[in-house]
Image (cartoon, rainbow, N blue to C red; front, side, top):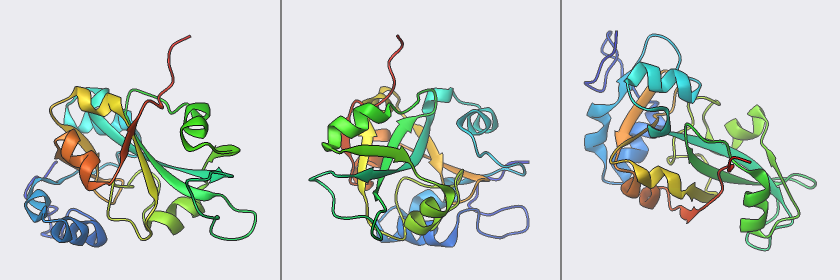
Length: 185
């Protein structure tokens, strides 16, 4: 069963409350009604695309990386930790960490561990939305997202997604457009 009225089958809000509030604060409260909740988790882009019934590339993945030594970022959360960066990329692509490193002029970039993702965003991996996070981070968005009229992104839980025009999503996330997806060899 899928619900699209912004609530689950029991009348509970479909989106994570922090994310629903972020939508309202951004003047996007009308999007709450378009959030879809699924009975099974959509933690991966493939699961989300299958549940929504869209192309894999129409899923917007929100991935947190840790970055060290970038002149564009402040220090990490604590000594020895990297600064978190959010990368938005289409569901059919993988992020090229070397491209992210070059884009940020950093010494080192790695995928963030689950505890760093939750601490930075306030959400669990598989449910991280493109905005509405606990802390403010630098955001990079791969240009591939703009190839669609609509993309689907997590709405704060592994069971929820919402549709949005990708240009608006990139703007609301405060993202810089870049080319950071892996290229076929």
